[in-house]
Length: 181
Image (tube, rainbow, N blue to C red; front, side, top):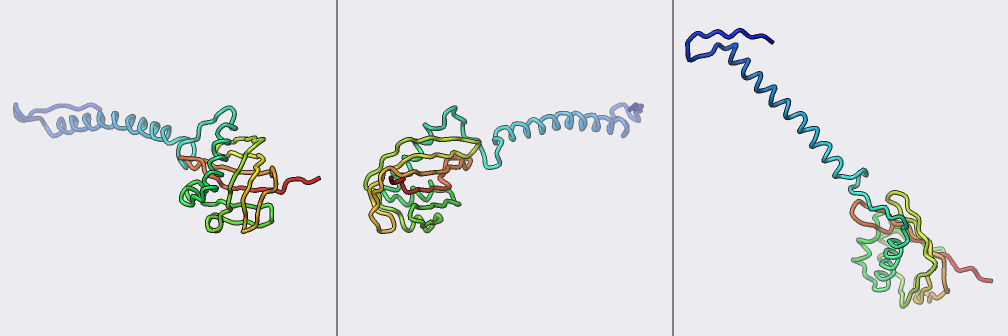
């Protein structure tokens, strides 16, 4: 853009020259604002992680260590009948399927917790894909479920944990009767 500067008075610029100065300053501001806005967007999207729910859980090479901690935490909370702890530990969509055929969703489960006097976890194996941790193991329990004594010996279990963007939560738990000869 070519401008011809005309002076009508020695101390005053013409309106064309003043407009040119404002346009140049405005263009300079935009040339700085656009890259800064793009940089801000790139940094914000990188900081939020790749999942919509927030930061991703770290991906250990062997998920068994994390799974062992989570399964033991579940049984400790259950053995203490820690409803407040379980409320946060169980995902909103939690479901349980018991060996006796009974099942429950989160609220019903919390209202009717099993009594666990003693437990032992063995043969734990875990697999992981993104925000899901699937764990199978044997659990030997002494206690009662639905008011009935429960001491079946090492019984197969399956627990599924999900990463909610901040922490692992138990989404599903199933126990099965041990095989009898």
